[in-house]
Image (cartoon, one colour):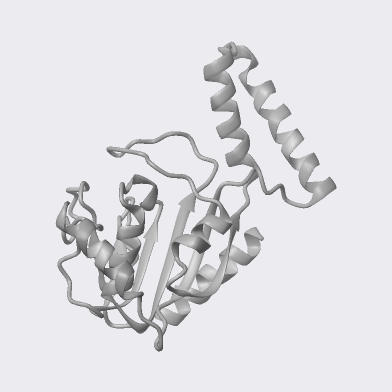
Length: 216
């Protein structure tokens, strides 16, 4: 599945390469390209074009051809409202790529609200047509997260840290070989979707989100 994630991310990049209006939610230290419009409410660096709230975007409906949102939604309080806003500002047929952590340590910037399973991200993005979705594999990352948890809770001495980390990694790899990749231990999930050309968000759902926006 890890290879398919890399494969589909490249297919997404190829598909949107020549699109004109592109939005990147959060730069995370690097812009995808100079033509991308980067937004982030809290990042004040020169990489960000606008310090806009993803829950209430000041863009017209259908303003963008594609949106990329990586490792951001876990920090958003009203996550489904943020998804509604990304759906709204995409044109029909527009593309979206999203990544959300599943197994990751708490990291508040300034808050950390959510983790997401594969069924969960499909539920969140049910108003899009799914092109592809899946999980991130990565033994080293997951072993490190588990090690960090155990080190904190069990107060593992520093001189034992490497041994504990390797033991955790060994158990995760053995589970993968025996059962296929564990659905309880993986790094994150991704979703590639397309805004439908022939289906709108239900009126009552749109009204609910507009109400939420009025309270932000």
